[in-house]
Image 1: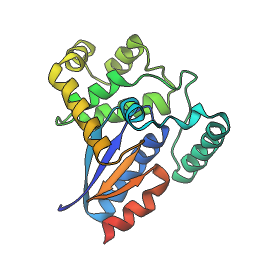
Image 2 (image 1 turned 90 degrees about the horizontal axis):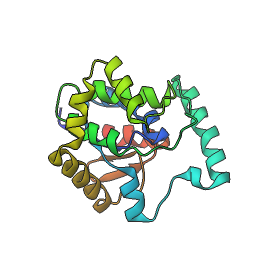
Image 3 (image 1 turned 90 degrees about the vertical axis):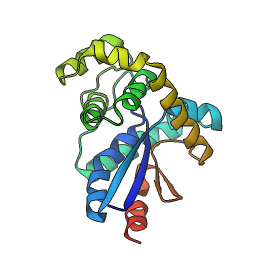
Image 4 (image 1 turned 135 degrees about the vertical axis):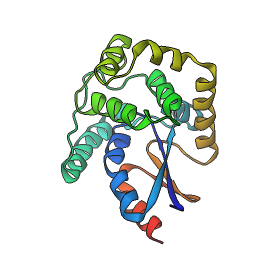
Length: 195
């Protein structure tokens, strides 16, 4: 496959979850490969002066309804946890650590579904350990992974790269140098891949 799409995401972004449910189909239909780019959305927000839409009450209320409409359109489950939003630093370090391993996609599925389907509070280390253990991961191994300096630096470097390329939120998808922001722009991603 010569065509690729880069998917910059953070687990704490509900729109990243919705995009994740659709991108494998879009990529398959286009004969493209997904390049997974876990980044730290908090770092992007800090560098760009952006913030989560939920921080603005009227925008946040609209966003919750809009995301529910998209979940219904896509035919996927979605439920906000009462603990939303959470600090995703450890979860994103996990994604960076597993990124080039055969466990990556299973890890991503486990975390996205725990957050956005099962409403787990993954801001708590003990809940993360329980979720990972049930999914066949060793929580002690996970702790070693997310504490590894090389993993920390990898996540930091990807986040810095995203910022340099103009990313201001999640999800952000690149097809070549063409940037698409938001899960509600996936039709443009499909069109870009078709060209």
